[in-house]
Amino acid sequence: MKTMLAARFHEHGERDVIQLEHVPVPQPGSGEVRVKVHACALNWLDVGIRRGPQFGAVPLPLTTGVDISGLIDEIGADITGWSPGDAVTMYSLVTCGECEFCRAGEVTVCPQHQIIGEHMAGGLAEYMLVPARNLIPKPANLSHVEVAALPVVAGTAWHMLITVARLAAGESVFIPGAGGGVASMGIQIAKHAGAKVIASTSTPEKMAQASELGADHIVNYRDADWVEQVIAATGGRGVDVAQDLVGAATWADSLRTLARNGRMVVCGSHSGREFNLRIPQIYHRQLSILGANGATYNELCQVLDLANQGALRPVIDRVLPLSEIREGHRILEEHDHFGKVVMQIA
Ligand SMILES: [Zn+2]
Image (cartoon, rainbow, N blue to C red; front, side, top):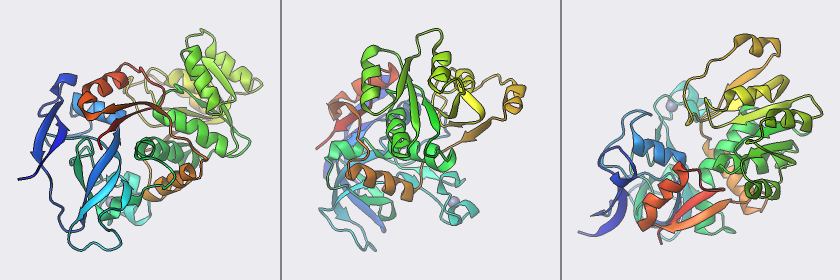
């Protein structure tokens, strides 16, 4: 039997549960293709799933990895429009296609949705299976590593800022933690939309990198008065939109940056899931708190197209071989990066 290398864990736990193992190369079923993975980027999701079943049960042993770029290696039955050798990336949500949300095109809230790389084997392996309807042609002007750095972070940032928060030209947006993957895409997408961007980060080096991505003002969140600095950058008014990906540790400050009628759009809670909200601050200043989850297939195609045209730049901190998968998780857990950590597999 033909085998391949895959990064897997058989139980939840610290980084040392991740093992590189030889496993059978999967055979594509009806409607599926097998992709030879060239690059797979890490996301906070990979760390969260490995640590514990906080998002619900996952099948063990599991190979995670939702952001891939590679070449179709073999096609299953009933596939039209794709051939071996085609360069592809993928949309990672597998939805029911039948519920009221799927029928309305709002697939990110499908109650049945599953994620490739969470509920089924993902791309931190030499080969993986992908349903043909999840395939997207690889943007031709970008390398496999660059493409793998985009789907989750660019799709999520677009869905948060443009679709859910309806950020418009001339508005201002606060994007904290500029070194994070979604934040580094959020800065570029907000500038593309014609907004004024105020970002925060923690070191002079990361402040310079945020500036290169197009942020108009950058504050250092280690300064005691950084919220006042954000507000001052809007002429004392506060921002129209704050993008919060961090959770309990940042909600209070993200809300303080908002102008009256401001919107805080949220996706992610890795610093904590519960927050003590002072309700009057929401209605006195007429604030909105908006949840965003993932991105749709069409949104992902749109951001990949922007990247292919050069309007969005993949932000890559490091490229590592699959043998350094535990180091990749360490970098994410210790926030030791600006942009994506990408595993190069072929
Ligand atoms: Zn559905």
